[in-house]
Length: 169
Ligand code: K1U
Ligand code: ZN
Image (cartoon, rainbow, N blue to C red; front, side):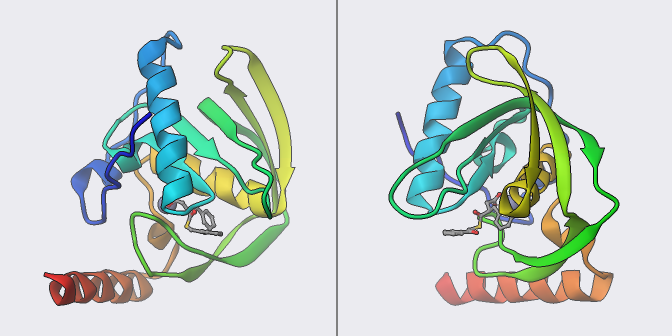
């Protein structure tokens, strides 16, 4: 297992749609293990492969609270149902460090994906899990949470990010 560097916006890889995974082989299993290590270290509750520079449709998620871990691997995830009810809540992103904003999304979703054992799974999710899964699938499509905001809010966040980068340089 290895930590992988997390790409920071405006890296163009983060705006590029990812390709579906074919066979779940050792390369994919190593990617998944590295992504969990990177997500837990960050720390975060989710991570998508494009965030570590790999344009494949792989997501890891763990929204468990407290000590116990509940890791989930979603390969080629697809949202097959969205609730009409929309909910707003604050989101962060490991590719937009220290930036947070309220994002409105469907409150519940059903997602179909393959797990690491190459089994097809259909999962109903709500609350933070639904939000995190939607945020991560957005990454697979080259979409960041700021793309759900107004152009003004988006440019304010990108300016703050550039300023904090200049401060660190
Ligand atoms: O994809 C990512 O950049 C990870 C992101 C996922 C996410 C956060 C909030 C709402 C939707 C999706 C994060 O994990 S940001 C860090 C974070 O939220 C967190 C970190 C430690 C403890 C609890 C939360
Ligand atoms: Zn993110």
